[in-house]
Image 1 (cartoon, rainbow, N blue to C red):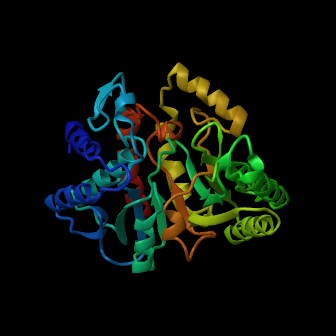
Image 2: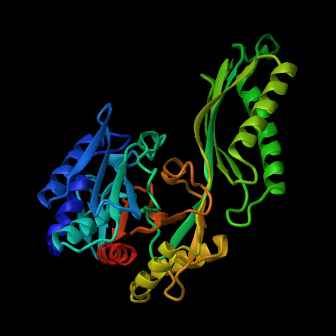
Image 3: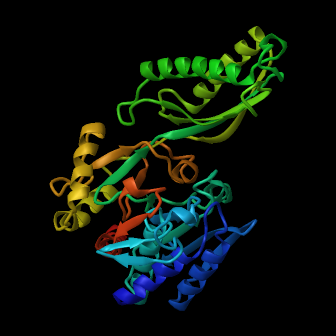
Length: 407
């Protein structure tokens, strides 16, 4: 397969609008593509045009090396893009399009590398299993269903092609997302004592929750992942300036470490809300939107060592733009590593979650796990999302060599 043929595959993936789901058509295209190269696959239709896809090559025996990407993307505001987000645009060594970084670029690279091995009839001493998931950007229901199906029961190793650039991640925080709703009583703002201000109650309870969670987080930090974090990311309430608001809601994102677990965070939030309801007029309610655990793999695994050995020469030959070099300095100051360095292949922990929290639910600690994929993670979920064309081609080569080396 030449470069133009590879680009056609990525171009086709980008053309599917899979924001907030709708992965079925993309999965069907990939199923047809794989079959053209003698690779059978199974589509798991989850309804509402959402789907997972599973394919295998090799001898069908252990070890089973699972490679994974998600088919969905985040929503895009078409009017804010300089180009059509569903058309792959190549310019000045970059590729623009929805999901080109997160993570249709990684998914396409996995598929192309797998096809290349199949076409070459390379003898694998084990099984290479491709698992493409639905709904990672929402509630991870695709990977949740695959876990329930037992798709990972015999898997020894998991690589997820989320964008990392020339470094790899072996540990991710978990996540608990809450919706906190305040029910008050409307009144005219000139007579606030006739009403119950839902916004004020919501602000007050959020401050109490924040204080408790952050204090516990400070006392229960993880050596690898750091500490649990708390952010209020959505806040809604009120109808007009002279009306006491009867309703308000907020959505909270917490990123979890093992030492201050998902269950403990949820229990602390519930305890604060219960006490608040007992001592205040009005009503505060909680809804859990997402609940996934942290994952800490083995930084000394064969998978990590093979990635470092194979990818380091590509890293050393990479040319970064002045803008990327400046971003690297800022990242070094804020997070202690430079994603645009040619000096050292970093093995890191990450604050973001992945499908591994569902796929590895029985193997969350010490497993052979890595996140390693093409693209600049700083460009995820961005308007005018783009990725380096040369890096993408590099990763196709790296994956092909990695799959051969590992199996």
